[in-house]
Length: 376
Ligand SMILES: NC(=O)c1ccc[n+]([C@@H]2O[C@H](COP(=O)([O-])OP(=O)(O)OC[C@H]3O[C@@H](n4cnc5c(N)ncnc54)[C@H](O)[C@@H]3O)[C@@H](O)[C@H]2O)c1
Image 1 (cartoon, rainbow, N blue to C red):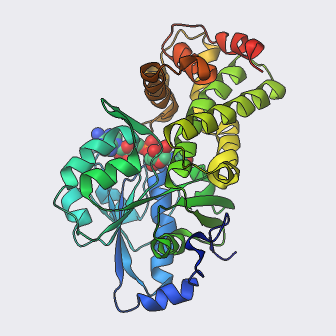
Image 2 (image 1 turned 45 degrees about the vertical axis):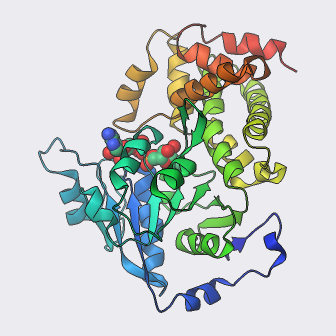
Image 3 (image 1 turned 120 degrees about the vertical axis):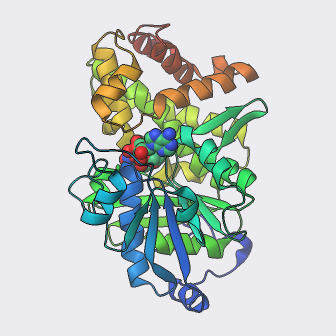
């Protein structure tokens, strides 16, 4: 399928450039791409990107991937094993990344001379990573964030794309969607949404870099909407896991998804009035919500939490069930709760606040069902 720019509308009224035109425009300068992150999704993102940099003349073949270095049980360094076997044996075992993916444990050397920076680490590490990158990247580098989550600061909530832009002084798009990494890794079809602010040409370049026959990417002019969808659906997935753990069935799960989508939309619009309704119908919206509430690690660990009657903490279950992978929904629920209580909005968002109250042990998992009984 061909990459598409702006399913929603043609912004700025102009005609979009075809991918080939963009490629020819940039033929004299080949863009270097660095992936910052090498977990489950980071590794799949590297594989997608590496297949395209080999194929498209506007990109350097080599894709560098920054790895948070770990020593494996064998005593070897993860980076050495990735570079020898072309496989991330810890976070994406059994999948070849592409011979043009080069793992580098040194953040500064990984981003040196990079024109395009793909951020894809768990959100809690992003502030530290950005601090280390100040003054180390090209001034005209472009960034994209695949990170789902937000930072809550004294001044209010800060989305990860804003953190990147503010700390590094570069513009930042986002890519979100119904993208369970292990399914894309084996070539099962999925869609994704690139959100951009005002530069259509840059958005088109990101679409080119990620789009494959089994990964269909569309760009929309709504960074905030795309990123808030990707972030907030993890809170709803925790609620979906609770009702699974309580064996409530599919109708209850559907009710959670509907009410969750409603709170996602209301919260997004309160935080950022420019968010477009149509964004909730893109892959980053309803499709990501559905896949995350059906599969995905947040739902899975929340199910185990509810089955145990909330007696084992999320930290303990995460360590036991995810082998180094990180949960996002519980920390995002805490961040959202902080925003809600700070702004006096708690009563407007009963699903989001109930998820936090259950995750922190204040309410039992069954409170999610009691909440449903009072919602409409
Ligand atoms: N996995 C998916 O299916 C999926 C899909 C879409 C989006 N995402 C999002 O992508 C982002 C990255 O997730 P992932 O699945 O690639 O990661 P992951 O949870 O699989 O792996 C955790 C990663 O964090 C690294 N890490 C651990 N401690 C660190 C530290 N102190 N500093 C920096 N890095 C450290 C680990 O080395 C590892 O690479 C998240 O925001 C997630 O929500 C994930």
